[in-house]
Length: 88
Image 1 (tube, rainbow, N blue to C red):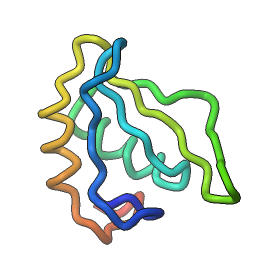
Image 2 (image 1 turned 30 degrees about the horizontal axis):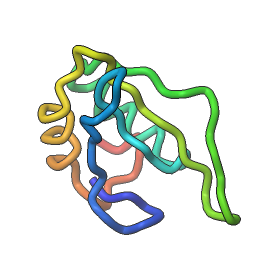
Image 3 (image 1 turned 135 degrees about the vertical axis):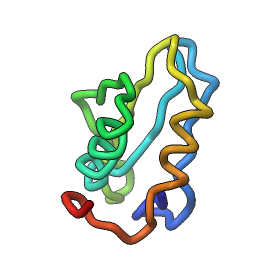
């Protein structure tokens, strides 16, 4: 899956103290939720979003200490780049 803001591949960060996480544009939250729910991944999304220098707001998807960063990355990589949310 591609970050709609940077046009780069979304990458799950595994360096978090609280476990792996993913920073995404708020506009991609529905699509990320769909993919993670479909694969029954445990996650939560921060209630806050940050926008710097007039750029689109970004939020964090957390996978917890037991989250499997490699599995989540494989799920995201398998998602078509151009499929909008709500379309199977």
